[in-house]
Length: 430
Image (cartoon, rainbow, N blue to C red):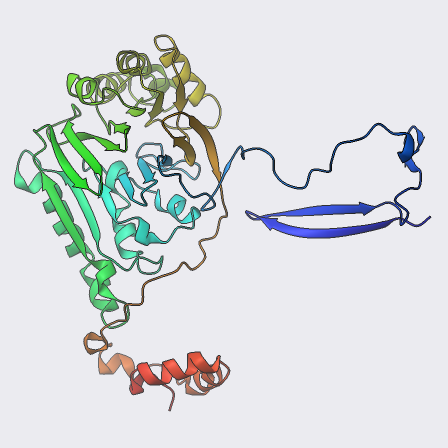
């Protein structure tokens, strides 16, 4: 009796899986050999059918693989940390996706955009950004989102909402104006080579002192209110849609503004910084600096527990700590649990919460390490604005016309035709 074994190789999220199909015998009625002897199929009590498909919900979120229901919200932690970015943890960034197709980013801290890329979603999705305040760990990757947008599939301008400051130069509009000035060389050099609408940005600055609606479109209402952080300017937000509510603190100490405006939230994401002793012992902060910053700028775990205990959300979430990969999450959780015993998560990068009126599921994103090319709009660059290097630089280019001719000749005919029709003649091989 000859056994036959078939192998199928499947690539799933960068992992090669070998699926082995054992055809033990050509005769399905023959006896089956086991470590304990021979089994006669005719006498076995096996009446179940083979498992041919997944019969339960996945315990992970495979990036980009699940459509949201009509009454569903998905919240993804694209960054859960502080300014000390590390490979396993980016600074603060939260993506909220809704069943109506809308998506919103709350804060866009340093190091978070690789996690955006991991989702393999065209960056046309990432066009609405709500900044709580202008610390680098809350808006430091805005330049990357802006400048890298075209390469990642964004074909429309960004819109950014953010607070004013105590003086005009401390507000969001001034920050964006200086950001665009910093990128002037970037933008000019891309003129005529890339569509410039993806480099455009529209700023919506609002008064940080008010409790107000700052966004109201397509059934989505976003409110802001003052946060009590290191100085005037920071805000917190809530998003309400279809009977679901997400509230997000940004950086703040516990305050009455938040307790009032975050009522009746399904999910509350509140900062919860490392305990004071961790700042001193594990992160080598001077004790006086640890005390001043922890008590006047941020929220300690037990105090976050008090906030959750008052609000009683369906899900409470802590973020804004340094994940050491050992015991930092456990210490945060222990501090919160001194006070609060309700549903609770300590956020990690790429943790996911799916929220419906009936259920909340908590999982992690599974995805690849490579951001492949994503679909993009059809906007073409304005060739009339093409810039070139000065003549004295251009004449020093090595003659590569022979290589370029060979490349052009070996391209797909449709690609070659489009290049010959649309690229300026002086940029084609002679």
